[in-house]
Structure formats: C-alpha cells, structure tokens
Image 1: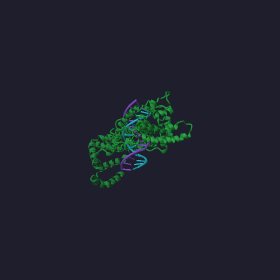
Image 2: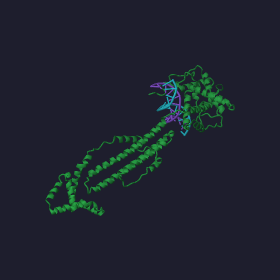
Image 3: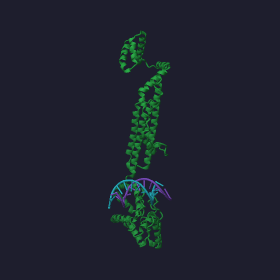
Image 4: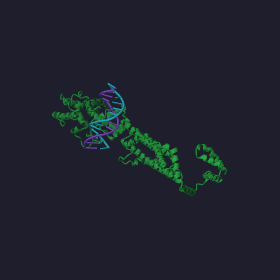
Length: 477
DNA sequence: TTATATGATTTTGG
DNA sequence: CCAAAATCATATAA
C-alpha cells in the first residue's frame, strides 16, 4: 500500500502533463470511498509489479488471450489506434508517396544499357563469376537484425572494392575485347547475386517485422495501416542498400569501360628505335614483308612492344607502302643505303645490298617504261582510279613485252626471290621456302604487284599525295 | 588551328 | 585465324 501511495503521488505530479483525465482521480481522492481506494490500489500494484512478472510463455499467452477476448477490446483498440494515429503517425503519413527516385532511375537505366541488369544477353558467363560469387560469401542469417543493414552494406562495398582492385591490377596494356566482356559478365554476375540476396533479405526482414507487428497487435494498438506504413519504411531503408548496390555496380562498369576505352583509344608512338628496327626489317624483306611468328616475336622483344603490335605495324606498313609507293620508296632507298653500308662491311653476305635496292630501282624502270603516257583519269574516284591504272598498265606492259617476256625482266619480288629463294603469296604462312621453285610470273600476285603498278603511273612526282583526293578519304564531318 | 602521321580497331574475304 | 582495306582517334608537325 505504501508503494501505491507513492505511486499515486507520483501520478499526481504528472497531472499537469496529462490534461483532463487525472483531475478525476484528484476528485476521487477528495471523496475517499474505501472500496474504490482498494481497487485503485490493486491496479496500481499490478502495474508496479508487471515488469517483475515472468515472461512465462503459457502465462503470457493466457493473459493475452484474456485481454484479447475482453469485450471492450475492439473499442479500446480502435480508440487507442486513433489517438496514436493523431499524435504520432499522422506526421509520417503526410510524407506522400514520393515519385521514384530519379537517381535510382538513372542507375537502372545505365545498368540496363550496359547489360548488367535486365534480360540475359547471351553468352555463358557462369565460369567467370564463380570465384566472385564464392567470395561474396552469403551468410544465410535467418534472424535478421537491425545491425545487418550496415553489415550488408559494408559487405557489398567490400565486394566491389575487391572487384575494382582486380581491374586495377590487370595489365593495362593488355585489355582486350574479351577481357572487357568477361569482366562485364563478372560484374553482372556479382550484381545479380547481390541483388538476389538483397531482395531475399528485404523480404525476410519485412515478413519478420510484419509477423512481429501482427503478433503485437493482439495486445497493442497497432492498426493494419500502421503495419503497412512500417513496411513502407522498411522498403525505403532497404532501397538505400539497393541504391548503394546499383551505384557501386555502375561505378565498376564505368571504371572498366573507361579503362577499356583508354586502352583502345590511346595511341602512343613507338620509340624511334623501335620504328627503326621495324623499318629495317620491312625494307630488307620488301619482297615479302610478312614476318613469321618467330620473327614477330623477336621484333616485338627488340622493340619492346607486343607481337600483335608488330602485326599491326606490318599490316599498316604494307597497306600504306602500297598506297604511296613513291614516297615509301625514297624511304626504302634510305634504309637500303643504310643496310647496304652495314652489309658492305660484312663481306660474306653476297648481294644483300642489291636486294635492298630492288624496290627503288624497279620503280624507276617502270617509270621509264611508262614514259609520257598518263593514265590518270581525273574524274574517277581513287579506288577506281587505281584499278584503271592497273588495267591500263597491264595493257601497256603487255604491249611492250609483257610480264612473261625476258625483256620485262622480273618484278622486284621475283628478283628478290632469286636471291632469297622465297615464296610469294602473302597467305603462305611459313617462311621456309616451298620445295618447288616459284616462277617469276607468279610474282604478279606478289603482295604489292598492284602497288608497283600504281607507283609507276605518271611521273611519280605528280602522283604524290594524290591519295588524299578531297572528299574521298576522311569525309570530314 | 589544321593537316598529316600513325597505332589500333573494324570490316571484309578467304 | 590471317591479311587487306577501311576507318577511327590521337599524336605531332605545320
């Protein structure tokens, strides 16, 4: 009873805050009825000791059941809900359904555009991502605690950090298309794994909370509406994680992409020395400038570039040599002179210098042969022009003896072959000479037969740079 | 700034 | 896959 009294006085102290309910008690106090006093005392006693009561399952259920079945329960429930609604929840309620986050939409769009989200875009990417999937280490916590939000978030960050490091350490110079695709697939895989886990976690947690609230609503004023709102709140919280996940994914894709594009677009000139070496090889194998794999490897090693760069270089060189043979041949002579000097010192090599000179010398011969005839048809496009020139040249050559004639000598390639005993066609892969002797006539099929013809048209200097005819190359937008 | 040189990529044909 | 040809995009010379 003493406790009750003290409690009572405390309640009295709270009266100011609680408005119109407590004054009744005060009035009651003024007019003490022993029985009433006793009742109130009991109630207060119960309240005071309620926290000491065991949470014994059976007992609790019993109490809840009792409460639940009380005839006043529905009314009380709705009233309390109403009060709660008015005092607290209405504030949150005012937050209307916000339109979909534009940031999230952008992220979604990008992920779809990059093929990370959305429908599978062909190609089995399963193997690539096994490691990462394992690394992401799913921990199937069925009991999801609040702290798991942060843990998950940290985990996701960690995963992407790891992924990004992988991209960093991968050899920058060797990013190929396949690498890009593989890595994109990896990102995609990780993203989907994580997104799946995210959804699962979100749903589990939501279900958990909803169940909890439902259970609680048996003894507390929790309206279904409030549960709904709670679900919304949970979704929003999880949306932050979703956003983070998507953002990280986008980031990873962008980094990967920029890296890839950088590798693709950045062009660094080779060193002077490398170009020198490549040119030496090219001009000293002018008749057949197709280095074998071994030769490519050696050149690559000497020049400090990759084999595919060597291949690119030779591809470009061949095509450009053909396109502009006059100029190229000056260069050829230059290199020929240089290597000739070197070869001269080396007495043992027979006729090496002569071979180098073949290109330039031969062009001169053709030019002489061509004489004053001009086969340049000005009104044609370059491509047709070349073809016409070639055809015209064939005509001229045949008129003046033709390829097969001895007087025509041989094309540069064939001359060179006499020295080198080498094959002719570009497509023969192996450098070793074929057993059968290639005939000089075959050399019309040589890699730049057409180019030599082109080179001999006109006086040489008037064709210089003609490949840049306006509007044909590089249509300048 | 423009024009050319040049390494790389894409397209095309076999 | 290889090579030619076309094309791109940048580096560098003018």
